[in-house]
Image 1 (cartoon, helix red, strand yellow):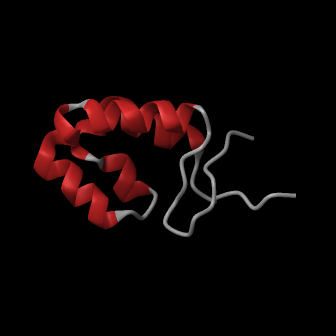
Image 2 (spheres, rainbow, N blue to C red):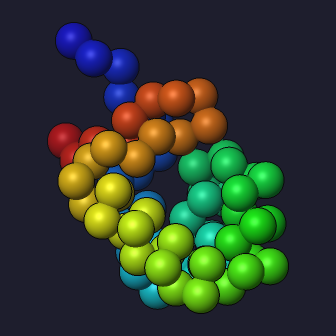
Length: 72
């Protein structure tokens, strides 16, 4: 059985969807450095946030420890 992150899938998706340009979803999963970069670049002018949203929905997004954030 593959190890799964303790961070929730639904909160991660919602944070990225509504606050993705500010990188709040990255702060939530523990990626502080890239979260700050997203704030400074407004989510790569939205492109970085959109890519993150797609990766999260495809369940390939990882937390700080390298564990996948999966829906049950």
